[in-house]
Image 1 (cartoon, rainbow, N blue to C red):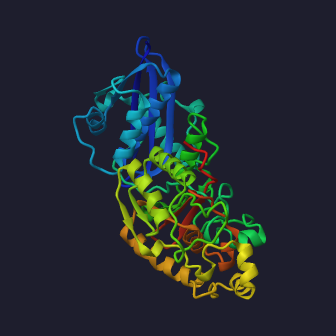
Image 2 (image 1 turned 90 degrees about the vertical axis):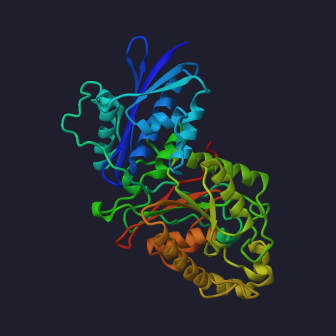
Image 3 (image 1 turned 45 degrees about the vertical axis):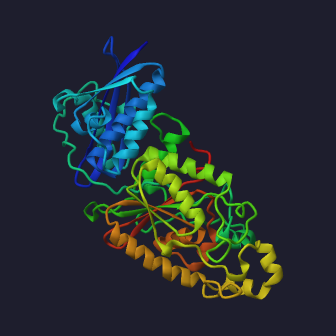
Length: 448
């Protein structure tokens, strides 16, 4: 049986500040370096970066030989003691990362040892190279690594401190899966084809997060890693803005009404998730657990969102707070109907609704203008409550579209030009100067 040595490190230049990790896998018998891994992860705490380095090192070792035994050496007393089981893991940021690390190899095949910082120069150098690359708007590449040749810091700024609040979560402006599904996703998705001209701009940087950590780069090359990397890299903002309040917007999984593209708001039957919806929620939870950056979860009060949030919360070891401001629009007499059925039964009201955000659905439903006012107030309240933190908001099509629209400063009609699949993710980071950065990623339903 092969034995590997994994040395890992992580750091954050600030509190919070730009963070990165480094990991190296070597052969225990020969000392030969077999694999290096490093990544700039945006704004995060020192501890998050250290755990990310551990996880990357274990995954790299597993790729080399899943039957091997591994001896981990790190200069983080916290990580070593927690992973050895001698210290409890209480902080919500650490729990999902520790759980993911423990699942890479079967119990008993990984041992842990603390070592002095000066002996961890290789991984430390990798972490600093990743942070240097991030500062240039680039991603670290193994082909440019100098860590093995020059493991000494050589004047490289030490990565210290901690912090948090990167724009994780990912995103999902979507266009696959359930498509315009319950509620407004369809609305004019049926009428205008949706999807076109979706919200890709950003007040602080475009929807690709200024190119850092886009969905094409991967330390391991697999789809999960590419998607997770794209999920959590923040858009650009002035260095002195501090960590933003970052909302990771998760649409609930499918309900029985979703594939039928029926209006399903806050005034209808309040359906629960279907089997497909629960599977979608599990996949989203796995993706967020890999990222390890969610610090709190807030859900709409409706059954489908609370169920989705509960699945994610169980995976991340967090509690769910409910906020009524995140509920879906009330579609009045249109609840449970398809777009075609509404056009047949209420053509005048539908045309007025499509033409003006102030128009209400038949029977006293909620206008998009009223929804926008409600969401703006909810946004302001949550930004104040979670300043500098990364929060998962489990909600619906219209609230997500509205938050994205408001962040972009887009006109009301842009709601009809976005399409969100079930269990999709979108990210909006709110900075101290009032600006925002939006990040979108396509359907996560295929990810494990």
